[in-house]
Length: 75
Image (cartoon, rainbow, N blue to C red; front, side):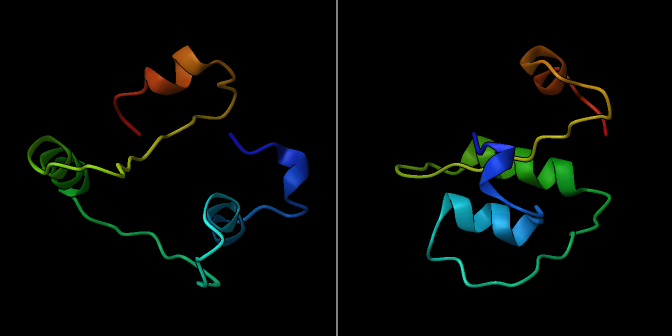
């Protein structure tokens, strides 16, 4: 969790640096793929990870609770 007060004008690069100081990228670009969700799910199900996992969370406008955000199944 990163409090909104920790970043003056949030953008993906600033948020990433709050999570990991070693990130040096100034900007991130969205990856557009019709099979993107399937690829992430396949990777997550079949790759053994010992240290890190990743994921994508989609928050719709007006969603404020954890249940609403983690309940999203489509974007």
